[in-house]
Length: 336
Length: 282
Image: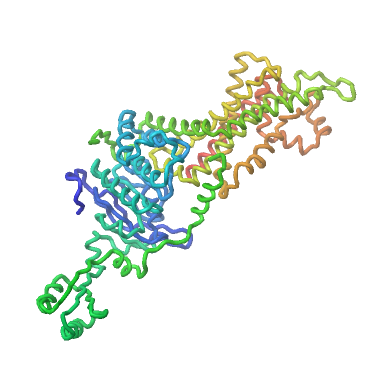
């Protein structure tokens, strides 16, 4: 489990319950009978390539899209029958920025606080506190259009925490950011989790980012392929590798013949696919003294994803929406 | 640190006071954006100057109730006076439609989502948006009133109050109409299209810059003017809106004076309800 897990988790029941959700767009099945729970206080990652159904699922959970079948509950509140109730405990950071860039940083947060019905005193305190959390205090009165994209993303995280959100949805929060900003983004999220009981659900296609999550749900083609802790996923679907350089040729030949089905040889190095917990131990008692060098390679989530979906994660060309957005940015339409 | 908990009951709806706060926030955003949009403000100032000072004063001497030197009826107003309420309406119309069109930008640039995932009911979101647009449009309409001296307009405080009420209704109805149109638009080519396809046709077909001869009966009017033109003008609800405003500011009505306010209230209600129906489906 996560090291800075909040000590007391009082309220019972999972933060999010998804039950047999399906959604179809025309002839495409965007979500195919998806079910899973997210425990309170977890950082939960939805991992999948573009078009896997991550965003569709997120939109259903934040009540702006209705599923064809199935139910979803946020903190015990049904998103279909009581969307207004469900929204109060939600904080959402969408894939595309949703700030008003003609308003200042503080005005955007104030707007959010008012719309979520946060009482005045709490609103004031939270705005200051959240700006500090994402290190934007100095830009408090700057127009949002003057901020960099990384700063805008940080502001959106701050905004999603201005009201009493218990569940934070982030749709590709680090897409388009440089490595440093991505690392800081996660730092802010960790800080936020220290500040209140917060369940974080994040979609991403950056595989290295999900290592620190409590649970990873691999989704592709609208179906859930796996849902487990990263370590468990690696154990089940990934492979640990043993790289061995034997002392002499006889040992090498011996190893090659003993593990014919799981060993491959690259020059003087032999790579063994580890099968089972006792494997390394058994191997070492037999050949330990006759080995010059040995290294263990941990299984990566990349290999998990590859073995689950049969392909690597990758980016795709910009969709119609991105193009419209780009047009708007260039266009300088004066109503904007 | 932040255990300043205001713990909402899970699933409970927002109290009315908070609901009003959100309405205020949406209204305030519209107003702030309008204040910061210099282009819109320049349009709002220049347009009435052109219409009242150049077109109005320029055409003023040619506007008399006579044909070939023979006086047929006494016109109780000058052309500038006649035009003045229409210019107010035009200014309101531009601003209303422009703020309504920002719905499209909110949708395309994602800000709409921020509001849609909030616990505000759709009706309150829409009302806030439309009231914001209405306020800005009313302000732009009131800008024209600064030119009242040039139009030789004298009005009592009661006239002014009644006129402002009518202007509010016009602004509300036109902003709602703008939202209805914006909701139906999937690909957006810019505000110029709206100006040419919606605003100007409605404006020119509302008996705004020329009167239908008040001394003639409806049948006689159709003889003098082409029938299609008269029909279009009579079908255009804006005709009655401007007529109501003329009643307030120059005490002259081309139609039954009760008709204007009724049409205006109906326009405001119908367009708002259509906008609301569309918005619930977003």
